[in-house]
Each structure stands twice: as structure tokens, then as C-alpha cells.
Image (cartoon, rainbow, N blue to C red; front, side, top):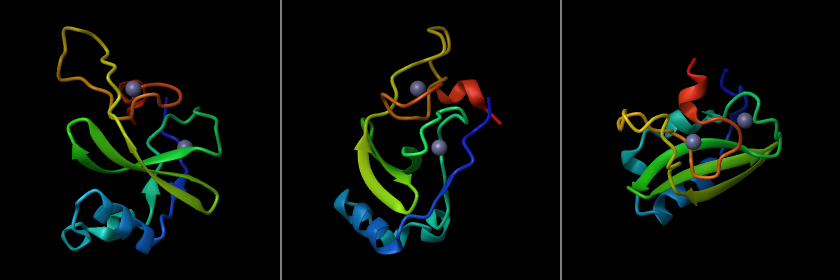
Length: 110
Ligand SMILES: [Zn+2]
Ligand SMILES: [Zn+2]
């Protein structure tokens, strides 16, 4: 399984505001990395309305993500996905958010 290939283009000022809202300093963040942000979901998530790109961690239980469809971008705070591929490998975690569409991230590396 491969990644979704959609790229988001979050408006610069809205991204800065979203970062400030969670206590981050945009001046300390490589903002150019967010000019194009790749959808982190699996390629078959199949919902053109609902791509999702990771922005930053806010705390251990909260992450800032941007979701988009077409030109519209929405910044959302989401909890990390709690799923693990197996109980023996505690280091293996899903890099997506709780309740995401389609497969967990370990299932579609590459
Ligand atoms: Zn997508
Ligand atoms: Zn997951």
C-alpha cells in the first residue's frame, strides 16, 4: 500500500496563526516545509474531501494536523492513533491520528 499522493498548500498566514494558537513560534519553524504538505493517509483512503497532513506535535496526546479538499484547508487538533501492530513491539506505532481513514501507517510504508 502506498501513500496518498495529494499535496496540500496551506495558506501561509493561516498556518502561522494555527501554530501560534497551539503555542508554537512560527519564526522557529521551517515554514518552507509546509508550502506543500503531503497527505499522510494511505493511497486508498478514497475520500477526496478529506486529506490530512501532519504539522507538529502539541503535546503527547495532541497533534496539529491540516486537512484539505481542493483549495480549502482546515487546521485541527487530533489525538495520536493508539493502534499498535503487535503487543510485542511497543516501539511500533501508527503515525496517524485517532480515527483516521483506511490503514495505519505501518501498513503502507513506501
Ligand atoms: Zn489523501
Ligand atoms: Zn492508525
